[in-house]
Length: 132
Image (cartoon, rainbow, N blue to C red; front, side, top):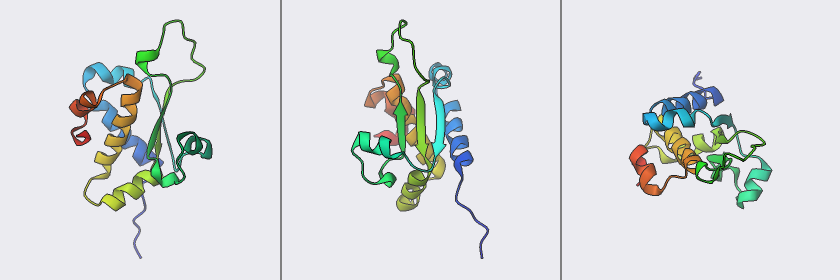
């Protein structure tokens, strides 16, 4: 019998934080203001809001107001959050079989961070080579 266990939420968080630290300097600080949460699956409400039936179909989600839409007069009710869904990420990682877990977590994290920054596809591609 093997003692190998699936990466836990702490490992996914560690990989996402490494991805944040690897961002270009001008984005690293602002990215740090976005809360990071790692859970096994999206909630039913999250899935319903996006019209997704299968919880394995959602690997990440940005909840918040993109920086391009924020105003200094806005009073946020809660911090912006990037959700990473561990089981969906692990399922995609196993199904792909051709990428490292770190590369996949980075890809999902950067994609969600792009919503926060209001990045275009070209902007994302400068950070995440896998994007194009």
